[in-house]
Image 1 (spheres, rainbow, N blue to C red):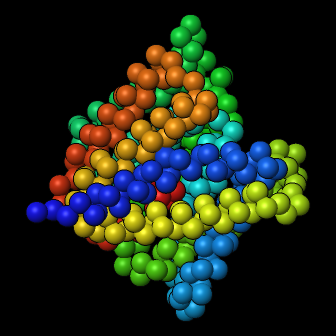
Image 2 (image 1 turned 45 degrees about the horizontal axis):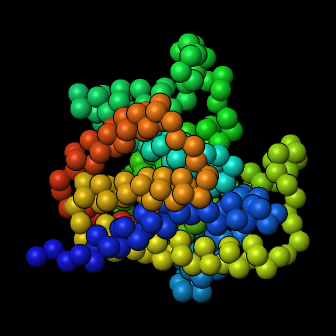
Amino acid sequence: MQSPLPFAALLFNAFVWGLAWWPFQHMHRAGLHPLWATAFMYAVVLAGLLAWRPRLLAQVRQQPQLWLLALASGLNNVAFNWAVTIGDVVRVILLFYLMPAWAVLLAWKVLGEQPTPSALLRLALAFAGVVLVLLPADAPASRLLHGLSLADGLALLGGFMFAVTNVTLRHLHAVPGPARMFAMFAGCTLMALAVAVMGRQLGVVEAFPPWDSTWVLTGLLLAGVLLLGNWALQFGAARLAAGTTALVMLSEVMFASVSSALLGASALNTRTVVGGALILLASLLAALQFRRPAAPALPGPPGH
């Protein structure tokens, strides 16, 4: 009989990321922009990893191809964390879950995998859902991008970079897992710092605030919980089929939707619900494509 522990581990990871929007918003209200928060948290995680395995940095230096993984993972986290802090949480999560659609296109262009009819169906469902989520009911299709907010754009970018990260991980399957993990967390830290500095110069990111116990304690706690969530992801995904893992991880949408609706961080309407259903159906169909056992998983950005 299958142990319930792998399922529980994956549900814990989905729960962590489904509710991660709240501490980011809490830190933002305390004066810490999500970019500074991301850099702070992942710097703490990196310090912990180096204390645990001091030789990791030398291993990473021997694998220059990990820079692409660091870039993709870093931009994924930067975009997602910023989006859930300033935007409608449900809308952001749904747009982020376009990742399976982007993955089909990237695998076609980068890995040479021809899309199957079912993959093309998933693409059509996902992008039809995006149109419903983004386009007001009385607006023509030509104005699809006119109402795009910063949070919407960040969510789309985050989902795309998550797909790039997954494709890159497949390409770097021979690189030791701890080295890939370190590269991903280092990318999150460095890209958050880089974008924060650029945003500061452009006037869209606030200066790093004075140290405050509210955001310091929240950031430290969230860093620890995210690390536990990533370990839970590794434990569960290494013991379940890839399709099962993907299906369980879709529960993140439920956790995010329920928590944000209860706490007033989301406004649901019919078009968002229907469009979200189409996007999730595309993700569900993608998950059902996998029936083989999964290789040991890496801590995914952002823990999905």
